[in-house]
Amino acid sequence: MITKLNWKFKTKYQYYLVDTIPSTNTYLKDNFNEYPDKTILIALEQTNGRGRYDRKWRSDKDIMFSILLKNNGNYEIITPLAICLALDSYGFKCGIKWPNDVYLNDKKLSGILIEDVFQLKFEASIIGIGINMTDKESVMGIGLNKDIDKYDLINSIMNNFDNLNKLSHDELINLYRERSIVYNRKVYYKDKIYIAKDIDILGHLILDDGNESIVVSSDEINIKESLI
Image (cartoon, rainbow, N blue to C red; front, top):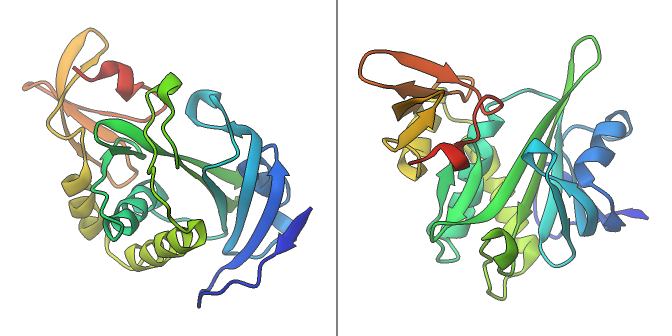
């Protein structure tokens, strides 16, 4: 059962809570017409959560929520930055592995899945966020391992999200560069070695081998397996 929360913070968002659900992203994708812009669905348990490459993720102790937005934006850049900035206030210094995984101490802390809904035209973006509260040794994941109020952290993430959404693309890219753990790293792609030089306005990675620069999307390369 999905319940609307009487949110204790001042916010422009409407918050909903569900005890257990297969996937908050899938639910909002299927039901986006029933909810207003800036809806957030928080799950206490996900039984069929999804990541990139359709990887399955089940969790009942971590932070799991999806954001429904009916305006497009630079969410690939804004979302991981919002998580990093929010965690700064808790004493965690995190970095971003392109396109939008958040890492702590060289291990994955948070995954983000952004899915757009089109019906002849753009209808909505669904941003799914999962943050490990405990270590996930089987997948080399790290958790916060700290007594943190989940709702306080979600509120902090969304406050940072809104502030970042007001910045120009150049300002966002500069902040992203500061947090990136991929910039200037060697990348093996299509039998060649490149240097990760930048990302463009669409969030694509720009690779350079000294002779030419190429642009690749996150669907074209598995950066985790390609970093040297």
